Length: 82
Image (cartoon, rainbow, N blue to C red; front, top):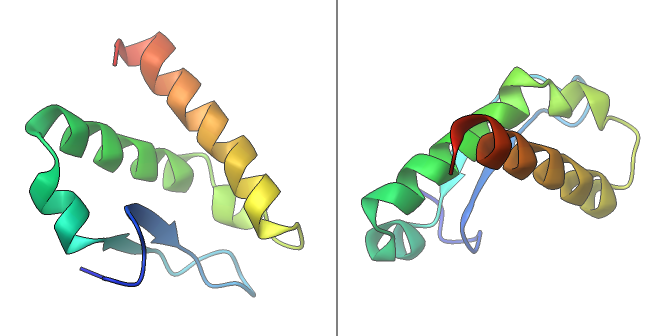
């Protein structure tokens, strides 16, 4: 749990793109229903599965993460019916 982030995230080692940490804001988590929690976990796992840490190395973090989020969300909505 990490109060420094607004919702949830996966943190990678900035040099290698590895060393995954799953961080969740405890207030966000407590206020989320079961369906939202499942989506958030699946969304963050997609970052690991699609190796976004390695792919985004050397890129500007905010636009790269936004692009990765779009991919994750589309995949989960289209492929899994979220």
